[in-house]
Amino acid sequence: MNNNFTRKRDLSKYFLPNINRARKRLEDAKTLKDNFEIPTNLIGYGINKKFHIKTFGCQSNVRDTETMMGILEMIGYKHTDDIKEADLVLLNTCAIRDHAEQKVFADIGVLDKIKKTNPNFIFGMCGCMAQEEAVVNRILKSNFNIDFIFGTHNIHRLLNILEQVLFEKNLVVEVWSKEGDIIENLPTTRNNNIKAFVNVMYGCDKFCTYCIVPFTRGKIRSRSKQDILDEINELIRKGYKEVTLIGQNVNSYGIDLKGENYVFSNLLEDVAKTNIERVRFTTSNPWNFTKEIVDIMKKYKNIMPHIHLPIQSGDELILKKMNRPMKIQDYLDLINYIKENIPYCSITTDLIVGFPNETREQFERTLDLYNKIQFDNAFTFIYSKRDGTIAANLPDSTSMSDKKEWLLELNELVKKYAKSQNQKFVGLTLDVLVEGPSKKDQSIMSGYSPQWKVVNFKGEANPGDIVKVKIITASRFTLNGEIVK
Ligand code: 5AD
Ligand code: SF4
Image 1 (cartoon, rainbow, N blue to C red):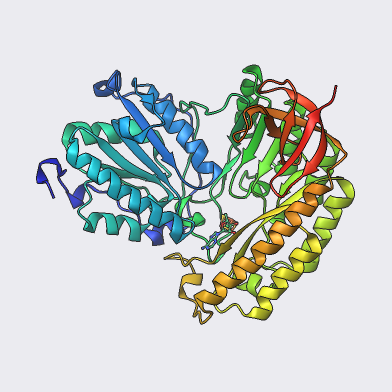
Image 2 (image 1 turned 120 degrees about the vertical axis):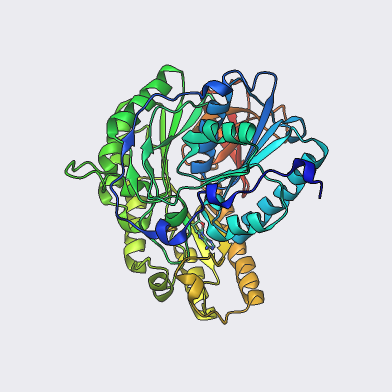
């Protein structure tokens, strides 16, 4: 290793993640609305420099990346898609499964090599992996010449951290294992000028036994109704056509807003009343998904008929072990209520196979449920052990080869119903929000139907238009048709 480029390592200066602290739920969250300030040392520092942020994982990370882009652009940096021409690279990471984490470690290795040839190059890691004790310890023990690590709770301190990296020449580790606050008024650079993600809540208090998110993202914190509506009204003024309300558990929105009696169905109604063309929301959990939410969806045409409703397993004992104690019959009743009230509503889900000690019989209950509901699509995963979670201590004698086989089997069902559900739309005319030319064939336009299906079509249209498309054919991935006047 070339020590010329090694940053000083001073353990006493680090704020290291602590999984026990991250588990606690003791403090009340605060909403901080201070004006964002640039450290004087850094004013104009990024002029003629480029940055790249590689984003892994969920919509929360995508949204955080937009905030970090906004922050870096305030000191003159310009974004580049090409990692090779960047002076500064940030890995905004996901901790949900081991597979995603291994990709990040591979990237750290690559960036470390770039640094050996270019000492002025700097790179850092943030996001959910930074909140994990085991990950940060592994990096500190390695010879990787990373410049900084910070977590999900202090992205507003990006410039202060960068200042220390540049002027003190130390490796900076600043991870706050806290329950989290809500920080408003941060700069932002949106990646799209038609569709926008809007955070409605942060964190999660559900503590499903397999899941690391309640540790990495802190406790549930709902933004105030007014801050959310102000953001959406501003987006409408700028010409945005669609907002997606995001959070780990959007339908738990408001339960922490003490004494306000204002919950997700109320928020959804108020957002619909802004008259933005399209409203979506994700992710929901089935056991807080009230009939009122369905009723509001039915009442407002601008709330799109798509619900992502992760069930994870079709077996009640597994669900109990996951700390998601739901009766399958209640889930089926909810799905029926949705289908009765919102025709052509698409329903998607998440499923985990191979939870510790899962049996073939239990896995088959997931297949049975899938056959009953015939989801429009599903994200399917093999269970991944996460340090610090309750499930990580459960005995597991189910073999990995069984788990892999089950995943393939489940995916066959997913494919089958993705196709048959799409075929239901053949002959119908759908409103499509146009994104632009299709990636595969530039002579064809592409966009999304209300049900969140990709629609490829022939005909003249511009990005941001909402056009009527008659569906002629359907595959597992897309609906295909032509514009009708
Ligand atoms: N292993 C596998 N899948 C997981 N998910 C969350 N944690 C794990 C884990 N430890 C999946 C769940 C969740 C989705 C976002 O990721 O299905 O709904
Ligand atoms: Fe994880 Fe469960 Fe919270 Fe979803 S609801 S983020 S799966 S703990």
